[in-house]
Amino acid sequence: MNLILISAEFPFGKGETFLENEVPILAQHFDKIIIISLSENSEQTREIPAVCEVYRYPVSLTKIQKLLALRFLFLRTVRTEVKQVASVYKLKLSLSIISTILVSWARAKKIKSILGPHLTADSITYSYWTDDVALALAQLKVENPKLTCVSRFHGWDVYFEASALGYLPFRNFINSHLDQQFAISDAGSNYARTRWGIYFPNKIAVSRLGTATQMEHWLPRESMREQRLIVSCSNVIPLKRVELIFEVLNGLVHHEIRWVHFGDGQNLATLQEKIALEKKSHLTVEFRGRVSNTDVLQFYKQESPEFFINLSTSEGVPVSIMEAFSVGIPVIATAVGGVPEIVSNHVGALVDPNATLEEIQLVIKNLLDSSLSDWNQLSQQAYEIWKSKYNAETNFRTFAQSMKEI
Image (cartoon, rainbow, N blue to C red):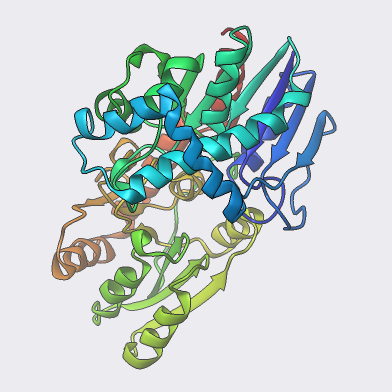
């Protein structure tokens, strides 16, 4: 049996690092994997198993193609989606939403034409995101119901609130036609079943992501450093609130703190300017940029951070938190999306996403003031959570088998 995996970037560029854990395990369960990447010009940066073939196709639409998408207003499926915006989602129908619907349909048709030559009767076609690729698979299923098509959904492709428009197109159409959809969290599954207004909620199953083993077993720490090392790993974009992490740590003046952040993004330069002007003497800041997943994990193992912090306003279940747990790093994170499924006060601290600066600082201060034995308990429990629920070998083996049984 063959698998066709469509990614946004992998194995090119530096995105979708979580597929580095998944693809090698899927390769053990399929005769051949065709990876179709929609990355347009980045270099290949990840090695892939021998059973994989890689193709890349640009799918951006020209201005003319976007204008021509107006003709899709005459399609029944598109008109149904337009009506659903107001009747089911209770949203005001704007030109931006109509444009999103039309461009998504047009882009999906372009992706559908690309996928055609790769399809075979014995293949499973798997969209890593529930986006325009998943819509293309739904279009394909209308034309050929015998195809097996599935998608995953994570965070931004689940929650309407994560979109600038407060809306994601064609959720009902995608769910109606795909064979199966896999949520990475209970929270995502529950949200999709209720907010999407879908007809077939039973087509949604939970299949958690996972990360690779980093330690043979957990070992306690024998002492605590005077300068506490706190790490974060994310894009520097508004919803990740990396600036808030700085403001929180900058106010903890009674502790020597070294903060290391992995990742870059549109807000990085502005944040660096702010830090240059406002940083206090107790805080050391290091931006490591967008480095490989391997380098991040190597840093964790060598430096053994005291805490990992994530103050996002929207998440699925962050792989970055799984990685922290895999090396026994307790986590401080906002209670959004699927985060409460992995983070609790037994492994760090959950923070209300609407908490004030002072409230977040109090949570972190209490953790920094905790004893060595308390920290070791948090660390061990974090590792055990990873081992029991987020082990890549276990989770992706089960996922592969689930797809083959459809």
